[in-house]
Amino acid sequence: MIADRTWNTRCVILDHGVSAKYVGALTRDRTGLVVDNALPEHRDRLLAGGLKGVPVLGLDAMPVTRETLRTVGHFLHENGLQTVVGLGGGSVLDAVKLAAVFTADPTLADLAEVHAKRSGLLVLPAIRNNEERPKTVLLPSTVGTGAEVSGVACLDTAVGRRLIASPHLSGDVAVLDGGHLATLPRHLVLEGLLEAFLRVAGTLTGSSASRFDDDAYSLMQRMIRLGLRLAHLDVPEMRLAAARLSMETHTGWSLTGRNPYGAKHWYVANELAYVTGVRKMTATATVIGPIWEEIVNGASAWGNRGRLDELWAAVREVEPTLASDPASGINELMRHWGIAKLPTLREEVLMQTSVAAVQSWGGVLPMLRGIDVSEIQHVLRVGTAEGGSRTELAGPHGPPTSGRGEGVST
Image (cartoon, rainbow, N blue to C red):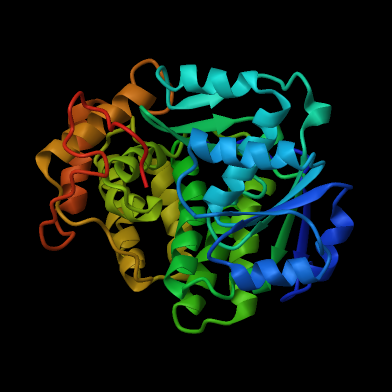
């Protein structure tokens, strides 16, 4: 899902290491830091600078659960925080955003738990006590999700991974510091760039023509140019540029007025990642080619062929060596960028994923409306047909029982 523009997020872009001195000026009294445990150097730099003496909570970069939110919520409440600074990848930033909202209005956490059984998406009502919500200053250490500015966050529940949407989930301040991206492996930078690219491409394919099409094509072309350069030359300026482009998918004009549920691949990849426990972009790489092939073959429920052909023609203006067929071309691009798919999956896993996708996002819901279980199974079979040697992936929840994963994914 995309949100139509961003909500009052102040975006700050800084050179390598500058945020350590700058971030203190962005905070109010009683500030705390929530940080990925894998980033001790970045943490210590912030604590030696503008955040000297503030309380700190370390989190592991794992999918967000109610237990995660209880931990962060307790940290916010115990320290009486007016501002919380979050440093880490998408899951850490999602934990900060959700905990800040649920701390201000605890009834929303109960609503999310109940609603999780009905749909994959929950749009939160207005916060009753928004003045009590801690302000969020978000510093991403990864590329792709744009969690620092997006009005959505993911929450793992007993019945699946759910998408929570609220205008209060976008960061009050988003800070890009090139130094925070320095330790990210290059293949994950490219993965993140592909994630941002497909956010635009997938949404365009599922939306009607718009006056902002040129903005979208231009943004995608800039991503492809940058990815081609990054694949051969990795320098800090390019990493920061990748993070800026990812942010722009949420804050710019390219997705304004689009179908918020147009990127159908996201919903299938979300379920595949939850069931198998793999990273979202590994799951996405598995399904995007087959979904685009279905669109080319006229399966309009997945997207519009004319729109897909147009956006791919814009891509090939930048990289004409890619195949003219969008499905073949996106697979070539992923190979060039070193982004791997899943290997062949067991039939039970294919069924569990496809049933979960339809239950959470299909039927009368607009996300996967008109797409049935067999069509999703077909996409998964095609996507894993050339994935490599067979791997027995039953998912982190064990063998499927009622067609849904039980427990919390990793």
